[in-house]
Amino acid sequence: MSMTTIEEDIREIARTIWASLFELTIEPGPDPAGAVQAEVTSLVHIDGAWQGAVVLQCEMGLATALSQAMFQSTDAPSFADVCDALGEITNMLAGNLKALLPEPSVLSLPAVARGSDYEFAVPGTTVAATVPLVSNGQPLVVRLLERTEGGGK
Image (cartoon, rainbow, N blue to C red; front, top):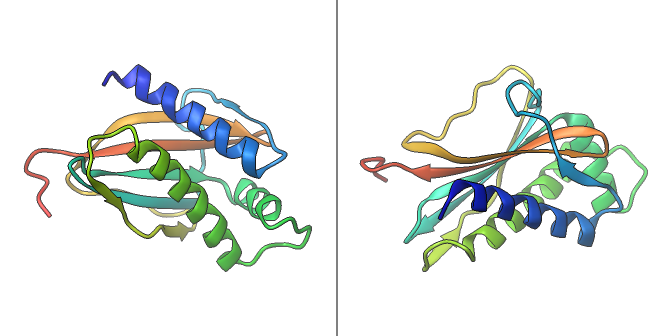
């Protein structure tokens, strides 16, 4: 599987999810280096014949807009609502990607973190794809991480 193909697949999966859930646009974004000041990070592990994780990172403003759109509310969402929304979006991205990867495999429950002063790493993995996107005029990035040989469990 070439990285260009998987990156195109991720963009198409994101477009499909956005079209079904939101009245917000999503389009390719600029080069991801420094494009997203990650304030919310959501992760779903894929474990089985293929091992890795799907990571979605965005700013709190976009996480709030996505939560409001998902729950059809104009009220400021709680962090629990943001966790539910971003976790579900990441789970949908991972589920659609899992269908393109060697089977069998299973998804973990989503994990969501917030803050502006943290570093994020999944030890034993390398970045297989980085896809910068823009939704509602705000940047987000989706990364596909793949377990490296010797990454162990």
